[in-house]
Length: 394
View 1 (spheres, helix red, strand yellow):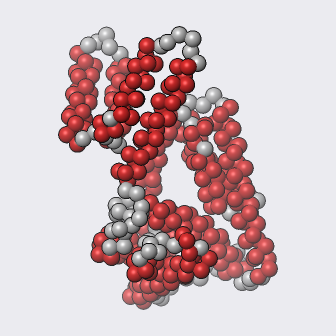
View 2 (view 1 turned 90 degrees about the vertical axis):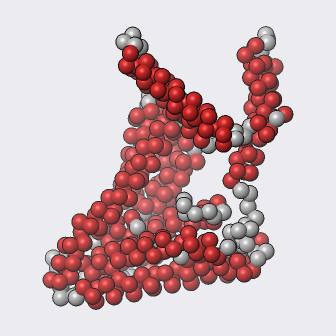
View 3 (view 1 turned 90 degrees about the horizontal axis):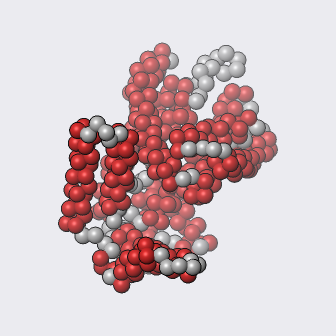
Protein backbone atom coordinates (compact mmCIF):
# COMPACT_ATOMS: atom_id res chain seq x y z
CA UNK A 1 0.00 0.00 0.00
CA UNK A 2 3.01 2.32 0.26
CA UNK A 3 3.26 2.44 -3.52
CA UNK A 4 -0.41 3.04 -4.37
CA UNK A 5 -2.68 6.00 -3.69
CA UNK A 6 -5.51 5.06 -1.35
CA UNK A 7 -7.29 6.91 1.48
CA UNK A 8 -5.45 6.83 4.81
CA UNK A 9 -8.54 5.38 6.49
CA UNK A 10 -8.46 2.34 4.19
CA UNK A 11 -4.75 1.82 4.80
CA UNK A 12 -5.33 2.08 8.57
CA UNK A 13 -8.06 -0.59 8.40
CA UNK A 14 -5.75 -2.95 6.51
CA UNK A 15 -2.83 -2.39 8.89
CA UNK A 16 -4.98 -2.89 11.99
CA UNK A 17 -6.64 -5.93 10.48
CA UNK A 18 -3.28 -7.51 9.65
CA UNK A 19 -2.11 -7.14 13.26
CA UNK A 20 -5.22 -8.84 14.66
CA UNK A 21 -5.25 -11.48 11.93
CA UNK A 22 -1.62 -12.41 12.58
CA UNK A 23 -2.17 -12.64 16.32
CA UNK A 24 -5.40 -14.67 16.16
CA UNK A 25 -4.19 -16.98 13.40
CA UNK A 26 -1.00 -17.86 15.29
CA UNK A 27 -3.05 -18.69 18.38
CA UNK A 28 -5.28 -21.01 16.33
CA UNK A 29 -2.19 -22.45 14.68
CA UNK A 30 -0.81 -23.38 18.11
CA UNK A 31 -4.03 -25.26 18.95
CA UNK A 32 -3.77 -27.11 15.64
CA UNK A 33 -0.23 -28.22 16.47
CA UNK A 34 -1.35 -29.42 19.91
CA UNK A 35 -4.25 -31.35 18.37
CA UNK A 36 -1.95 -33.06 15.86
CA UNK A 37 0.66 -33.82 18.51
CA UNK A 38 -1.75 -35.22 21.12
CA UNK A 39 -4.39 -36.64 18.80
CA UNK A 40 -7.24 -35.03 20.78
CA UNK A 41 -9.10 -31.71 20.99
CA UNK A 42 -11.31 -30.77 23.97
CA UNK A 43 -13.50 -27.79 23.08
CA UNK A 44 -14.07 -26.33 26.57
CA UNK A 45 -10.37 -26.55 27.46
CA UNK A 46 -9.50 -24.94 24.15
CA UNK A 47 -11.96 -22.06 24.71
CA UNK A 48 -10.64 -21.45 28.23
CA UNK A 49 -7.05 -21.52 27.05
CA UNK A 50 -7.91 -19.30 24.06
CA UNK A 51 -9.50 -16.71 26.35
CA UNK A 52 -6.47 -16.66 28.67
CA UNK A 53 -4.10 -16.31 25.73
CA UNK A 54 -5.98 -13.23 24.50
CA UNK A 55 -6.57 -11.54 27.88
CA UNK A 56 -3.18 -12.50 29.31
CA UNK A 57 -1.28 -11.50 26.18
CA UNK A 58 -2.89 -8.06 25.98
CA UNK A 59 -2.56 -7.49 29.74
CA UNK A 60 1.13 -8.48 29.82
CA UNK A 61 1.85 -6.25 26.83
CA UNK A 62 0.25 -3.21 28.47
CA UNK A 63 1.80 -3.86 31.90
CA UNK A 64 5.36 -4.40 30.73
CA UNK A 65 4.99 -1.66 28.12
CA UNK A 66 4.32 0.73 31.01
CA UNK A 67 7.31 -0.68 32.92
CA UNK A 68 9.58 -0.13 29.91
CA UNK A 69 8.42 3.49 29.69
CA UNK A 70 9.39 3.95 33.34
CA UNK A 71 12.77 2.36 32.62
CA UNK A 72 13.37 4.77 29.75
CA UNK A 73 12.45 7.73 31.97
CA UNK A 74 14.32 6.74 35.13
CA UNK A 75 17.51 5.11 33.81
CA UNK A 76 20.36 7.32 32.52
CA UNK A 77 19.90 6.19 28.92
CA UNK A 78 21.31 7.86 25.82
CA UNK A 79 20.32 7.55 22.15
CA UNK A 80 22.16 4.28 21.54
CA UNK A 81 20.78 2.57 24.65
CA UNK A 82 17.25 3.76 23.80
CA UNK A 83 17.54 2.07 20.40
CA UNK A 84 18.87 -1.10 22.01
CA UNK A 85 15.87 -1.03 24.35
CA UNK A 86 13.53 -0.95 21.35
CA UNK A 87 15.15 -4.19 20.14
CA UNK A 88 14.97 -5.87 23.54
CA UNK A 89 11.38 -4.89 24.38
CA UNK A 90 9.41 -6.93 21.82
CA UNK A 91 11.41 -10.09 22.47
CA UNK A 92 11.08 -9.63 26.23
CA UNK A 93 7.30 -9.11 25.95
CA UNK A 94 7.00 -12.24 23.81
CA UNK A 95 9.11 -14.33 26.19
CA UNK A 96 7.25 -13.23 29.34
CA UNK A 97 3.85 -13.96 27.78
CA UNK A 98 4.94 -17.39 26.55
CA UNK A 99 6.23 -18.30 30.02
CA UNK A 100 2.69 -18.01 31.41
CA UNK A 101 1.16 -19.74 28.35
CA UNK A 102 -0.53 -16.65 26.93
CA UNK A 103 -0.08 -15.13 23.48
CA UNK A 104 3.36 -13.67 22.93
CA UNK A 105 2.21 -12.13 19.63
CA UNK A 106 -0.67 -10.26 21.28
CA UNK A 107 1.68 -9.11 24.05
CA UNK A 108 4.04 -7.64 21.44
CA UNK A 109 1.17 -6.02 19.51
CA UNK A 110 -0.49 -4.43 22.55
CA UNK A 111 2.81 -3.43 24.18
CA UNK A 112 4.14 -2.03 20.91
CA UNK A 113 1.03 0.08 20.35
CA UNK A 114 1.16 1.31 23.96
CA UNK A 115 4.81 2.35 23.60
CA UNK A 116 4.27 3.88 20.16
CA UNK A 117 1.44 6.16 21.28
CA UNK A 118 3.58 7.46 24.17
CA UNK A 119 6.96 7.62 22.41
CA UNK A 120 7.03 11.43 22.68
CA UNK A 121 7.01 11.21 26.48
CA UNK A 122 10.06 8.98 27.00
CA UNK A 123 12.20 9.14 23.84
CA UNK A 124 14.33 12.13 22.93
CA UNK A 125 14.23 13.66 19.47
CA UNK A 126 17.64 12.15 18.68
CA UNK A 127 16.43 8.70 19.76
CA UNK A 128 13.34 8.99 17.56
CA UNK A 129 15.29 10.16 14.49
CA UNK A 130 18.03 7.55 14.74
CA UNK A 131 15.66 4.81 15.89
CA UNK A 132 13.41 5.36 12.88
CA UNK A 133 16.39 4.99 10.54
CA UNK A 134 17.65 1.87 12.32
CA UNK A 135 14.25 0.17 12.20
CA UNK A 136 13.68 1.08 8.54
CA UNK A 137 16.93 -0.71 7.69
CA UNK A 138 16.14 -3.62 10.03
CA UNK A 139 12.70 -4.19 8.49
CA UNK A 140 14.25 -4.20 5.02
CA UNK A 141 16.89 -6.74 6.13
CA UNK A 142 14.33 -8.99 7.86
CA UNK A 143 12.10 -9.05 4.79
CA UNK A 144 15.11 -9.96 2.68
CA UNK A 145 16.03 -12.76 5.08
CA UNK A 146 12.55 -14.25 4.63
CA UNK A 147 13.08 -14.85 0.92
CA UNK A 148 16.64 -16.00 1.51
CA UNK A 149 15.25 -18.63 3.91
CA UNK A 150 12.74 -19.72 1.27
CA UNK A 151 15.57 -20.16 -1.22
CA UNK A 152 17.69 -22.11 1.26
CA UNK A 153 14.86 -24.35 2.46
CA UNK A 154 13.22 -25.08 -0.90
CA UNK A 155 15.75 -27.69 -2.16
CA UNK A 156 15.53 -29.62 1.11
CA UNK A 157 11.73 -29.43 1.12
CA UNK A 158 11.54 -30.75 -2.46
CA UNK A 159 13.93 -33.56 -1.54
CA UNK A 160 11.68 -34.35 1.45
CA UNK A 161 8.62 -34.47 -0.81
CA UNK A 162 10.33 -37.02 -3.04
CA UNK A 163 11.31 -39.07 0.00
CA UNK A 164 7.65 -39.02 1.11
CA UNK A 165 6.56 -40.20 -2.34
CA UNK A 166 4.69 -36.98 -3.22
CA UNK A 167 5.23 -35.86 -6.86
CA UNK A 168 6.30 -32.23 -7.32
CA UNK A 169 3.43 -31.57 -9.75
CA UNK A 170 0.92 -32.76 -7.16
CA UNK A 171 2.46 -30.48 -4.52
CA UNK A 172 2.27 -27.53 -6.93
CA UNK A 173 -1.42 -28.29 -7.57
CA UNK A 174 -2.04 -28.34 -3.82
CA UNK A 175 -0.22 -25.01 -3.43
CA UNK A 176 -2.18 -23.34 -6.23
CA UNK A 177 -5.47 -24.74 -4.87
CA UNK A 178 -4.77 -23.51 -1.32
CA UNK A 179 -3.81 -20.09 -2.70
CA UNK A 180 -7.09 -19.89 -4.61
CA UNK A 181 -9.08 -20.93 -1.52
CA UNK A 182 -7.32 -18.28 0.60
CA UNK A 183 -8.02 -15.52 -1.92
CA UNK A 184 -11.70 -16.48 -2.28
CA UNK A 185 -12.13 -16.85 1.49
CA UNK A 186 -10.64 -13.42 2.11
CA UNK A 187 -12.88 -11.79 -0.50
CA UNK A 188 -15.93 -13.46 1.07
CA UNK A 189 -14.87 -12.27 4.54
CA UNK A 190 -14.39 -8.73 3.16
CA UNK A 191 -17.94 -8.67 1.81
CA UNK A 192 -19.19 -10.14 5.11
CA UNK A 193 -17.46 -7.31 6.98
CA UNK A 194 -19.10 -4.76 4.65
CA UNK A 195 -22.55 -6.29 5.21
CA UNK A 196 -21.99 -6.29 8.99
CA UNK A 197 -20.91 -2.63 8.84
CA UNK A 198 -24.04 -1.67 6.87
CA UNK A 199 -26.23 -3.48 9.41
CA UNK A 200 -24.65 -2.30 12.67
CA UNK A 201 -22.77 0.92 11.75
CA UNK A 202 -24.16 2.21 8.42
CA UNK A 203 -22.94 5.75 9.13
CA UNK A 204 -19.26 4.67 8.98
CA UNK A 205 -19.55 2.55 5.81
CA UNK A 206 -16.89 3.70 3.32
CA UNK A 207 -18.02 5.27 0.01
CA UNK A 208 -21.65 4.92 1.06
CA UNK A 209 -22.60 7.81 -1.24
CA UNK A 210 -21.61 5.71 -4.24
CA UNK A 211 -23.14 2.24 -4.02
CA UNK A 212 -21.30 0.89 -7.04
CA UNK A 213 -17.88 1.80 -5.68
CA UNK A 214 -18.84 0.78 -2.16
CA UNK A 215 -19.46 -2.79 -3.28
CA UNK A 216 -16.23 -2.85 -5.27
CA UNK A 217 -14.19 -1.93 -2.21
CA UNK A 218 -14.45 -5.35 -0.45
CA UNK A 219 -13.18 -6.99 -3.65
CA UNK A 220 -10.15 -4.72 -3.57
CA UNK A 221 -9.56 -5.28 0.16
CA UNK A 222 -9.87 -9.01 -0.40
CA UNK A 223 -7.21 -8.80 -3.08
CA UNK A 224 -4.72 -7.27 -0.61
CA UNK A 225 -4.34 -10.51 1.37
CA UNK A 226 -0.69 -11.13 0.52
CA UNK A 227 1.26 -13.59 2.65
CA UNK A 228 4.81 -13.18 3.86
CA UNK A 229 6.82 -13.20 7.07
CA UNK A 230 4.20 -14.52 9.50
CA UNK A 231 3.16 -17.40 7.23
CA UNK A 232 6.76 -18.51 6.79
CA UNK A 233 7.52 -18.19 10.52
CA UNK A 234 4.48 -20.31 11.38
CA UNK A 235 5.36 -23.00 8.85
CA UNK A 236 8.99 -23.20 9.97
CA UNK A 237 7.80 -23.48 13.60
CA UNK A 238 6.24 -26.89 12.85
CA UNK A 239 8.32 -29.46 14.80
CA UNK A 240 10.26 -32.11 12.91
CA UNK A 241 8.84 -34.91 15.05
CA UNK A 242 5.94 -35.59 17.38
CA UNK A 243 6.42 -36.44 21.07
CA UNK A 244 6.28 -40.11 20.13
CA UNK A 245 9.32 -39.68 17.91
CA UNK A 246 7.40 -40.07 14.66
CA UNK A 247 7.91 -37.53 11.90
CA UNK A 248 5.35 -34.72 11.86
CA UNK A 249 2.82 -35.69 9.19
CA UNK A 250 3.27 -33.93 5.84
CA UNK A 251 5.61 -31.25 7.21
CA UNK A 252 7.47 -30.91 3.91
CA UNK A 253 4.20 -30.61 2.00
CA UNK A 254 2.94 -27.90 4.38
CA UNK A 255 6.19 -25.96 3.94
CA UNK A 256 6.02 -26.27 0.15
CA UNK A 257 2.39 -25.11 0.10
CA UNK A 258 3.36 -22.15 2.31
CA UNK A 259 6.19 -21.18 -0.04
CA UNK A 260 3.82 -21.44 -3.00
CA UNK A 261 1.17 -19.29 -1.31
CA UNK A 262 3.74 -16.60 -0.39
CA UNK A 263 5.18 -16.42 -3.90
CA UNK A 264 1.84 -16.50 -5.72
CA UNK A 265 0.12 -13.92 -3.53
CA UNK A 266 3.09 -11.53 -3.60
CA UNK A 267 3.64 -11.87 -7.34
CA UNK A 268 0.06 -12.11 -8.62
CA UNK A 269 -1.77 -9.91 -6.12
CA UNK A 270 1.15 -7.60 -5.40
CA UNK A 271 1.93 -6.83 -9.05
CA UNK A 272 -1.70 -6.47 -10.13
CA UNK A 273 -2.91 -4.37 -7.16
CA UNK A 274 -1.84 -0.96 -8.56
CA UNK A 275 -3.50 -1.79 -11.90
CA UNK A 276 -6.74 -2.88 -10.22
CA UNK A 277 -6.88 0.28 -8.11
CA UNK A 278 -6.30 2.46 -11.16
CA UNK A 279 -8.87 0.66 -13.34
CA UNK A 280 -11.56 0.37 -10.68
CA UNK A 281 -11.60 4.17 -10.01
CA UNK A 282 -12.72 3.40 -6.45
CA UNK A 283 -10.74 6.17 -4.84
CA UNK A 284 -10.91 8.79 -7.60
CA UNK A 285 -13.50 10.86 -5.76
CA UNK A 286 -12.95 9.62 -2.24
CA UNK A 287 -14.27 12.19 0.24
CA UNK A 288 -11.00 12.50 2.07
CA UNK A 289 -8.64 15.41 2.45
CA UNK A 290 -5.64 15.16 0.16
CA UNK A 291 -2.22 14.84 1.76
CA UNK A 292 -1.06 18.27 0.65
CA UNK A 293 -4.22 19.93 1.95
CA UNK A 294 -3.98 18.04 5.23
CA UNK A 295 -0.32 19.01 5.71
CA UNK A 296 -1.15 22.65 4.97
CA UNK A 297 -4.00 22.63 7.49
CA UNK A 298 -1.86 21.10 10.26
CA UNK A 299 0.98 23.50 9.50
CA UNK A 300 -1.40 26.48 9.72
CA UNK A 301 -2.71 25.32 13.10
CA UNK A 302 0.86 24.68 14.30
CA UNK A 303 1.95 28.20 13.34
CA UNK A 304 -0.97 29.75 15.23
CA UNK A 305 -0.19 27.68 18.32
CA UNK A 306 3.49 28.63 18.07
CA UNK A 307 2.63 32.35 18.07
CA UNK A 308 0.35 31.86 21.08
CA UNK A 309 3.10 30.04 23.02
CA UNK A 310 5.69 32.70 22.16
CA UNK A 311 3.39 35.53 23.25
CA UNK A 312 2.57 33.71 26.48
CA UNK A 313 6.29 33.30 27.08
CA UNK A 314 6.87 37.00 26.41
CA UNK A 315 4.14 38.08 28.87
CA UNK A 316 5.78 36.08 31.65
CA UNK A 317 9.12 37.86 31.27
CA UNK A 318 9.95 41.04 33.18
CA UNK A 319 12.06 42.48 30.37
CA UNK A 320 11.45 42.36 26.66
CA UNK A 321 13.63 39.90 24.81
CA UNK A 322 14.74 41.13 21.37
CA UNK A 323 15.23 37.59 20.07
CA UNK A 324 11.78 36.54 21.29
CA UNK A 325 10.19 39.55 19.58
CA UNK A 326 11.96 38.67 16.36
CA UNK A 327 10.67 35.09 16.54
CA UNK A 328 7.10 36.31 17.13
CA UNK A 329 7.39 38.64 14.13
CA UNK A 330 8.67 35.81 11.94
CA UNK A 331 5.84 33.45 12.90
CA UNK A 332 3.18 36.19 12.56
CA UNK A 333 4.55 36.86 9.08
CA UNK A 334 3.86 33.21 8.23
CA UNK A 335 0.25 33.63 9.42
CA UNK A 336 -0.28 36.81 7.40
CA UNK A 337 1.42 35.37 4.31
CA UNK A 338 0.35 31.70 4.17
CA UNK A 339 1.28 31.39 0.50
CA UNK A 340 4.94 31.87 1.50
CA UNK A 341 4.84 28.96 3.96
CA UNK A 342 4.76 26.41 1.15
CA UNK A 343 8.10 26.33 -0.64
CA UNK A 344 7.92 26.17 -4.43
CA UNK A 345 9.69 23.34 -6.27
CA UNK A 346 12.24 25.71 -7.82
CA UNK A 347 13.02 27.29 -4.45
CA UNK A 348 13.25 23.87 -2.82
CA UNK A 349 15.68 22.67 -5.50
CA UNK A 350 17.83 25.78 -5.08
CA UNK A 351 17.89 25.34 -1.29
CA UNK A 352 18.84 21.66 -1.59
CA UNK A 353 21.69 22.64 -3.91
CA UNK A 354 22.78 25.19 -1.29
CA UNK A 355 22.84 22.49 1.40
CA UNK A 356 24.89 20.23 -0.87
CA UNK A 357 27.34 23.10 -1.36
CA UNK A 358 27.61 23.47 2.42
CA UNK A 359 28.42 19.77 2.75
CA UNK A 360 31.13 20.00 0.08
CA UNK A 361 32.63 23.03 1.85
CA UNK A 362 32.73 21.17 5.17
CA UNK A 363 34.29 18.15 3.48
CA UNK A 364 37.04 20.29 1.96
CA UNK A 365 37.52 22.04 5.30
CA UNK A 366 37.91 18.67 7.00
CA UNK A 367 40.66 17.68 4.58
CA UNK A 368 42.54 20.97 4.46
CA UNK A 369 42.28 22.43 7.97
CA UNK A 370 44.08 20.26 10.51
CA UNK A 371 42.85 22.40 13.42
CA UNK A 372 39.18 21.52 12.81
CA UNK A 373 38.21 18.32 14.59
CA UNK A 374 36.43 15.63 12.59
CA UNK A 375 33.61 15.35 15.15
CA UNK A 376 32.74 19.03 14.68
CA UNK A 377 32.51 18.50 10.91
CA UNK A 378 30.27 15.45 11.38
CA UNK A 379 28.00 17.41 13.75
CA UNK A 380 27.50 20.19 11.21
CA UNK A 381 26.90 17.71 8.37
CA UNK A 382 24.32 15.90 10.53
CA UNK A 383 22.50 19.19 11.13
CA UNK A 384 22.53 19.89 7.39
CA UNK A 385 21.15 16.40 6.72
CA UNK A 386 18.31 17.04 9.18
CA UNK A 387 17.57 20.34 7.45
CA UNK A 388 17.48 18.59 4.07
CA UNK A 389 15.00 16.02 5.35
CA UNK A 390 12.86 18.84 6.76
CA UNK A 391 12.87 20.70 3.42
CA UNK A 392 12.00 17.55 1.46
CA UNK A 393 8.86 17.15 3.61
CA UNK A 394 7.66 20.72 2.92
